Length: 287
Image (cartoon, rainbow, N blue to C red; front, side):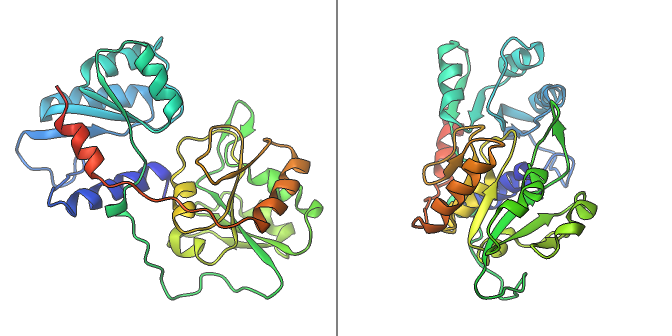
């Protein structure tokens, strides 16, 4: 399950805890005028179409920018903002950028996941078989995507440099679409391979470090979940990471190895999730 999907599911559960029902577009929608329609598309054209449709369905329309940029020179973005009542961003730099643009729309910074929607329960089933003496590192890939010639999730960076890491390190690769199945075959002595959907939080609970070697990123839900579960996180420096994340220089294996040792010996971080009340406050204050 991708980060945006996890974020939406979390929001729906969080709202339900407050007695508020949220319907997914096209799924058991009621014949009513909704108070708020919330668009989550990352594709710019789909986002604009979603905003246009939402104007027919709800009194107020908002959308979330799941990436780190919102190019206001782009006509799709200009129209989406103009037609919306509010914009939610996931990082402080983008909020500053939008505020300095003097947009005639309400903007706010909110997290990807909320406390009321987070399932911190851990299943009793062991998802991996562990051996004593090893440090287990979790690596996740939703797909095998490329952007500007770079592999988005950075799995190949890990596999190609695995021989440079101490033998005490073993990776758990969660590849839910099976796109790296052939790539991992030569490394099965160092990699536990999972190609199905599992409870990600439960898997986090069974590893020592979560590794995020991505080429590009937004406000990673997986990183936030790891921090909430007190699992150390090592991530590339392609975006600003949350407090507590150990950061290494993207594609620099020497720095990766150095920071991995630092991560392995550092105290576990912790992130306290915010309440969905902040989301509701924003919606209530829309003009």
